[in-house]
Image 1 (cartoon, helix red, strand yellow):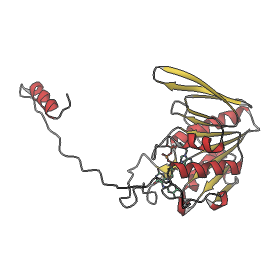
Image 2 (image 1 turned 45 degrees about the vertical axis):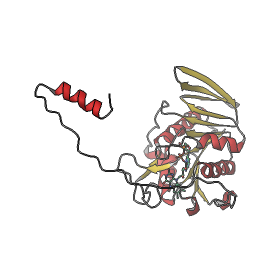
Image 3 (image 1 turned 135 degrees about the vertical axis):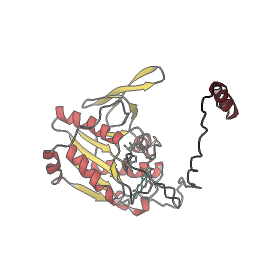
Image 4 (image 1 turned 60 degrees about the vertical axis):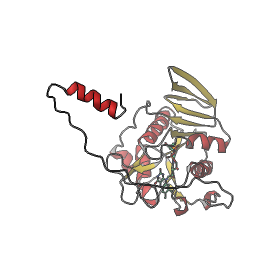
Length: 258
Ligand SMILES: Cc1cc2nc3c(=O)[nH]c(=O)nc-3n(C[C@H](O)[C@H](O)[C@H](O)COP(=O)(O)OP(=O)(O)OC[C@H]3O[C@@H](n4cnc5c(N)ncnc54)[C@H](O)[C@@H]3O)c2cc1C
């Protein structure tokens, strides 16, 4: 089985992230880039399948700035067989539709029985890319699964919804997205890190995939305005002199919080 795992490379959430006030995009030039944690979980689903089925091939696929190659190296160290990186300056600020067009072309380029993805990225968090990729590939989408079981012919799983667990299934090929309920990725061992150095990372542009990022008739999302978050104002301190409860109640009413 060939599994393509969509891995987004995102600014590390453990450090301060900044938004460019010119473009409205995350400042990726200065940020520490990491594999999105939700995509590491998707990769773990593929790796567990490969643990039991040694003939499994896992290709990590990312559309990312050039510096994202380090994160793809990590995917290889964790156990992916190979990687495909789509790098193209014309993709800066790509919206969900363009991203899906690129990723659908990319997984067709590498070949797949299953495409695994996160349900929503940590930074863009649109949550629409996996379903859009499935639509473009004309295959079923089993999205937001908190349990995934892969066989040679189908994927089954569970989607948690309000007050119910929905069992879903689809014949392969299919696109599957996973939630945070799935286990975290394993740690990369020394052997994996060394092995990753010999694995292949193919780099392609949008043109190599046959996608034109700026066709004249495309309806693309555009950023209309971006502004800095206003600084926090000093809070109100209530010191109890016997009337704290009353003053707290007044504060809640005044600020329409009650
Ligand atoms: C040079 C360059 C600069 C970029 N700058 C930004 C930026 O500043 N902010 C930003 O949010 N995005 C940026 N991107 C990426 C792209 O614009 C977004 O990936 C896209 O809009 C998807 O939106 P989302 O994160 O809301 O997707 P979601 O639908 O929330 O993502 C769900 C899942 O889809 C998959 N996926 C989504 N995007 C990618 C991807 N790029 N590669 C592989 N898998 C993916 C992952 O599995 C993810 O968990 C940049 C891309 C390039 C090439």
